[in-house]
Image (tube, helix red, strand yellow):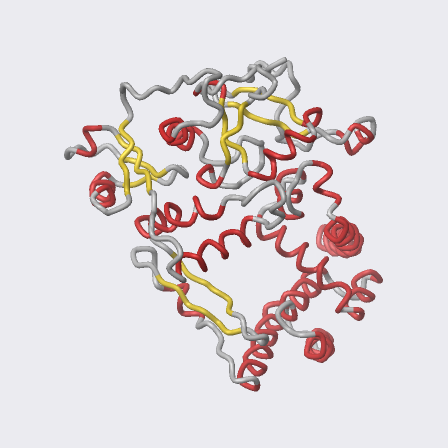
Length: 388
């Protein structure tokens, strides 16, 4: 009985996924999530709906490929095709042009009709891409790269059908620190009119470095003096990555790396209203406090964020003092300025500011205005010190 009920529920769930793909595709196409304070559809699905990255990727891939997969859409909606098969086909054709996509859809659905598993269909999809790459004299990245381990960094690139390149790889903590220190300052938004998302700005920053336009890098290793002088206490990078003591000392000797010692100092961190812009020292401290944007659920690293006057410097309520500053990504910094009624400000146990997104005013009375499970609690939550 449990077996039969499971199959019945899964079939119903597959039809539900068909409807979800349509809704998600509509939100993605119209950018409606931006009105609710989410810079991308991925961010909305992760933060608002609590989806894991792999589920986000699956659903967004299917939503974006629906227009090119009429047979998959029809069969999924009617219950004749499972969600697993639909996602497998959508992922297999995502890098193909429209002509090859139509042929691949028919071929892969034929394998489904023959009773092959979703894993086998995915393998056939990879084989189709290999054949197309061979036909067009392009190369595909070898799967063996995933078996290299975590000690050594590696990168592979694959040429696409239109002459571009897909990049895949792994950086160990040392190389990742240099990557972040070099690219993070260059990948910040160029201004309020910069509509590029973080991946686009990162690619532009990498291109600038490779072309010789920038040489400087800034990497911060956070540790205490004992670690730097031979102790065993671990250090960390600004994104929270733990670094063994010996490795931290080795990184700290590299050019462009600055050790941030945790302890008393005489660097002024309270500038009042005399200075509008945060100092380099304040920025360095904020990056240790905020590994990511202060907006709950936003995953933009702190090193790519902007310094935000929590209560507004221009309004005379937030001096340039370390305890009145936070880090927010460029997108949410502008969103907070233009939609102040959709940001609720609070603090966590460590005194760091936390910004909570609120629904648009015209949606707060609806059922969708309620936050998802696991979201920050209401203003009277005893775990938080909410600001007025």
